[in-house]
Image 1 (cartoon, rainbow, N blue to C red):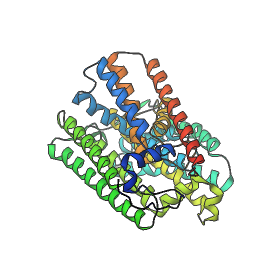
Image 2 (tube, one colour; image 1 turned 45 degrees about the horizontal axis):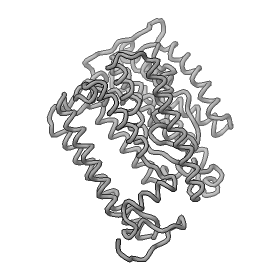
Image 3 (tube, rainbow, N blue to C red; image 1 turned 30 degrees about the vertical axis):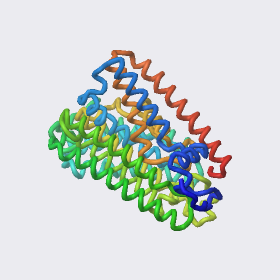
Image 4 (tube, rainbow, N blue to C red; image 1 turned 45 degrees about the vertical axis):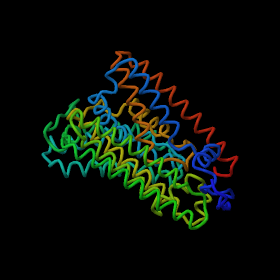
Length: 410
C-alpha cells in the first residue's frame, strides 16, 4: 500500500495499481458488475457441501470421475451455445443436431461400412452444414435466429428419423475409437498431475503477460498479488482434481479432449481478431458494423461453430452407450446445454461470457444430477433444483449488467 500515483485507463477509472491492494481492486470490479466465475464457483461449493453432507460417497473418487466424463457430451454442446449467446442470439436446434450427427455416424459406420474416422468427419461436417443453413437464413434473409433454429429443431429431427430408418437404435463397435472416447483412461498418475501443472503454468504466464501489456498502455490491470492468489487457487483445485482422478482410474480421455477444446476456443475468443469481433457483435450490431466488422460473416460462422460443437457433443453422448438412438436430442438435453452456458456466467444479453462457462455450468448441473441419483430422489426434484439455479443465474446476470451500465461498461 505505497503512495504511487493513480493512473486512469480507457474506461475513465483508476487502474488496479498496487497501492489499492489486491482485495480493493477485486471489490471495485465486483461493484462494477465484473463478477467473473465467483457466483458459480460459490454455488458449486455449496452444492458439493450439501450433497457430501447427505451422502459421503458424493465426493468419492469414483463419483467425481464419473461426473468428469458425464459433463463432456452436453458440455461440448454448451460451448457452442456460449458463442451464440455472445452475439446476443440463441440456438434451439443444438440437441437435435447432436442426435442427427450421431445418427449419421452410426449409419455410415455400421450400415455402409465407412471407417470410423471418415464417418466422424462427415458427422461433424453435417453439424457445420446445419449451422451454415441457420446462419444464411438469419444473416442474409433476416429471419430471427429463434425462429430459424426452432424450424431447424423440427426439420433436423425429421431428417434424423429418416436417416435412422426403421431402426430405433443402431449399435456400433463398443471397442472402437468412438466408444473409447468415454471409456479410455490414462492410468499413469503423471498424466493427470502433468495436466494440472501445465494448466497452472500456462495460466500464470498468460495472466502475467496480459497484465504487463495492459499496464504498458495505461488501462486497468490486475495487481500481481491478485494474479498470484488466482494462480494458487487454480493450482490447489487442479492438483486436487488430479489426485481424485488418479485415486479411481486416472485421467479420462473425454475430459482431456473437453479441456483442450475449451482452452482452445477460449484462446480464439480472447486472443484473436475473430474472437474480438464476436464479442463486439454481442455488444452492439450497428457499432460493430460501423467498426468494419463483416456482421453477416461472423453470424454465419458462429452458428456453424454451434452446429459443429453440437455434432461433437452428440458423438460423445453416443459414445457413452455405444449407440445412436431415435430418442436422442431430447428437450432435456437442449435445456441443460443452454442452462449450463447461462449458469456458468455467459450473459443472455450478449457480449459477456467464456467457453469456460460451459464447463462450470455443466459441473453444477451434473453435480445436482449425481447427488439426486445417490439420494434416490425423483428426476422431478432435479428439474426443480436446476430450474431454481438457472433463475438465480439469470437474476445475477441481470443485476451485473445493470451494474456495468451504471459504470459505463455494458
